[in-house]
Image 1 (cartoon, rainbow, N blue to C red):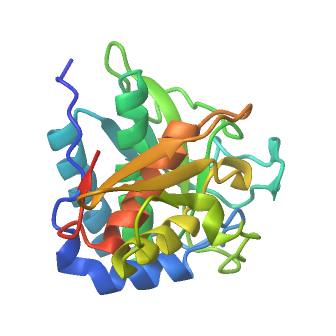
Image 2: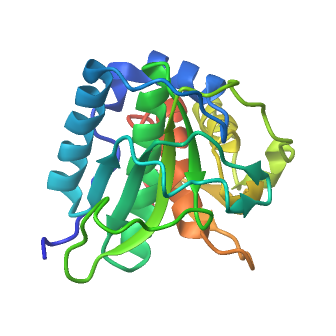
Length: 241
C-alpha cells in the first residue's frame, strides 16, 4: 500500500479568486437533473484526482453514471437524495491524518467542481456501496463520498454560528486571519455541526482544532475548514502549528 502523506497548501495562489467565489457560491445540493457531465469537466476532475492520489496516498475515485448508490431509499436528516448518478469516493487508509486529508483534498475537488458549474454534497452515511463501482486497496476504507452533477437548484446557505465562535487569539487579530476564519465558517460540515476552532498564536502560527461531537466526522470537517482558511488567509501569511 502506498505510504500516506499529506501536503496542504500547494498552488492555492494560482486560483485564489476563483476559489473564493466558489466558497461563497457553493451550497450542498441533494437533487440533480438528468444531464451527463461533459468530457472536459470529467477530464479536469480526473486530472486533479490523479494528483491527489499520487501525492497523498489516498485512493480517490470518480464514479460516473452509477445510479444505485443513491436510489431514493436512504434519507438524510436534511432530505432525500434524488437523481444522483455521479459521485466521488473518498477512500484511503484509516486514521486521523487520512481523515484530515480527505476533508482538505475532497474540498479542493468540491470547489473545482463549483468552478466548473457543477453542484456537490458531502455524504457520510446515506449512500450504498455498490459492488464493482470502485475498488479498494488492502487497508483502505471509504471515509465518505461526494455527490456530483447538475443540481435542480443551486442550494441554500444553512444558518451559521457567530464568527467569534470559531477563533481564539491572545493578540490583535490581523485581517488575513479574520478573512480565513470567515471562509472556514462557510465550510460544509456533517449535519452543519461546525465543530472546529482556529487559534492564533504569536508569530503568525495558526492552530486548527477539532471540537468534540457525538456525530463524529470532526477531523474530515476540520480538513475542509483548513482548506477554506488557507484560500482566504493566504498561506504566505502564516504557518500551521
